[in-house]
Amino acid sequence: MTFAISDMKVSSHDLTQGDRIADKHSFDGGNVSPDLQWETLPADTKSVAVFCHDPDAPLISTPGNYGFVHWLLYNIPPDVSHLPQGCKDYAQGVNNFDSTGYGGPRPPAGHGRHHYFFWVLALDVEPALADGLELADFLEKVEPHVLGMNRLMAHYEV
Image (cartoon, rainbow, N blue to C red; front, side, top):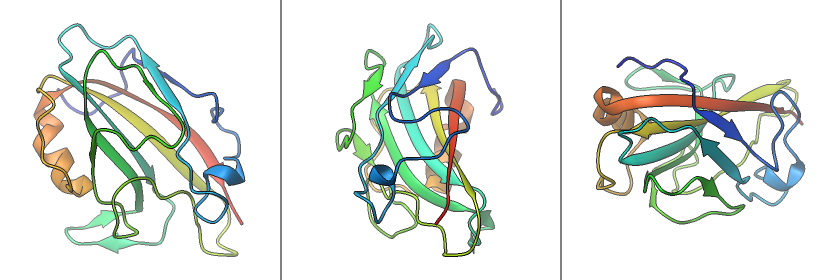
């Protein structure tokens, strides 16, 4: 399957589609990951992954990736349908702050509004990937195993 929006539903008590992200979830305002919920996973889902990406960030890195990765969480069992605020469970990938775990919005001052996409992927692989993957490596490993995906987008600016 190629990457395409599916029937999965993604929601949050902390984020509303298209609205501003609360300061509590920004890097300088608390840096607490928002809660996320999902439903309607495909029948053969064996694990779930979540990542947050800001395509508006002026960062281009090798091998040609663009934007800024704020969060990568994977190896989530398929019976889990909710991540609470501040979740530090499951495998943590590397963000573009050169750390693991959640790194909230922090666009450059005066750079305008940035859009943050919180993606949820349903995968047909058991939750056994190594900790510390970067997003490009993670996506290369899971792309053939994506059964469904959807996202929630919110914005932030300083």
